[in-house]
Amino acid sequence: MLRHTTIAGPRSVRYAQCVEPAIAERTRAFGLDLFRAARAAQPWPLSRAWLDDHALALTMDDAALKAQLFRFVDALPGLRSAGEVARHLREYLLPVAGRLPGWAARLLTALPG
Image 1 (cartoon, rainbow, N blue to C red):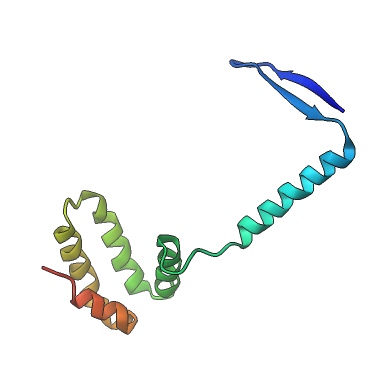
Image 2 (cartoon, rainbow, N blue to C red):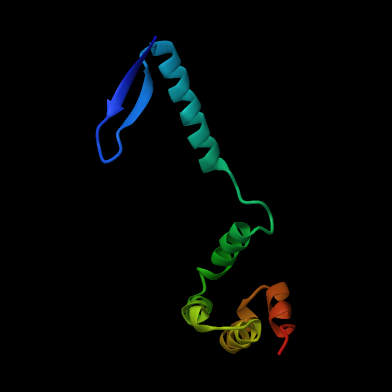
């Protein structure tokens, strides 16, 4: 059985509210399953979220590397071109390149400019 309820406010909203306990419980269980799945989801490999997670994992235990990355991130909003970004990456990270994984250090030295 449904009953209609109006929520008062700047825009009154009318919605149907389920008063059937079995349906309400199934809806609640479905919502909880969705939240569990969302929490358990892992980012796709090589997606931006995946790269962010791995970059943080690689750097958070190394104070010198972390400091240089924070300096770069701080400067990033003011950079206007890919060349400026590459130049700043080299400037900040080459001094700590030995602390980077080999593939990251090679990519850093291969940046154009």
